Length: 478
Image (cartoon, rainbow, N blue to C red):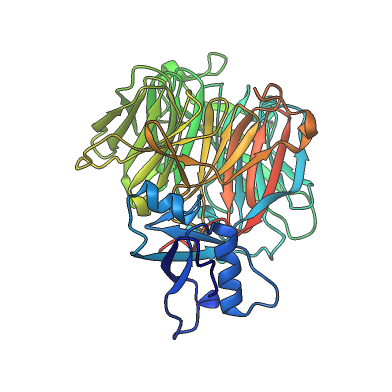
């Protein structure tokens, strides 16, 4: 490698974990100018690989993306230029581009995806019958309806109205339990299980009520499902988390005080139509320890007998579900509004009212509560989704009207130390160039990330929006 002799130089050893872009086995270390940044290093790798069509690369040193010159990195970390730097390179992420938008009549609060790669399908015993391009999008709206969409922006199924067994007010959360069942929760204080049936004769699919779950005393704002154990968790503004069975036969009777006053309580069933009735059931347990509305709840990634919840009381709690006991509480400085797990890093990501994302180590052996802070949003962070293709990636949805894509290895230095910085910001397509910094009229309420469909978000603009990129994260470890 020819370099300017008047410049400071450092020896680098380049390597990658991606076999298709690996250097020749006999490639040794290379002497380069310390003025080199990502672009120059990317050119160097392309030259060594003899790529006719240059490929953009990103570079990591000690597990952190290089966002400065090599000279700045050496100075910041007090490393001598006599040291050989081990640098990992990966294909650079391609910014997510807008793929499609699905328009609704009212605000869209929540989204989920059914594809061959989605959790609901991975849990299912049968193979996914849909071919590529036949994935389904589930949306929940403030108009009280669930909708299932195909990838051509067509509604293939809509849940019944309030008078026919549907929610009686705004739906706040919805999830595919499996390819044939859906769960939802609402400001009407209920959680509901639905049967989803696709026909084979080109007729519309059907969403029909299966179980109404009663036990909360206020809006139910978030749910989590675990199909293998037939369990569902809900988070409510009544300060509680409830654990439910998704099987009618396993669920206890609904508590009398929670049932609608306009029903015949003795029957514990509500007539939906002339020949249909919906069973009403109660919670397996109610978990009470938070002192403010519970904003989010998830099952522990590797143990469905453990749950985590976040609240406006600034706390993250760990629950032992068999005993309904809070076994640990991590207190932070701000209201926590959303939650996702980074299991391979033993971290939980919590979105806050203070516009940032806090990474928390929930293990009792952790010496500090906050492992890192991710900064970049301009308003509350109300939804989080883990990158299905990466150990390190997240997508976040905020009331500032954007989704952001994060890799926890992408950092910058501030007065408080290293903080995470987003890789990309995704605006609402409906906003155009007139998007307001505050997010007014464009707030994002929900986000999900599917490896096939992409980043799917829902918002105040009454739309579901799909964005898709490439190489956003390296493959997740098995």
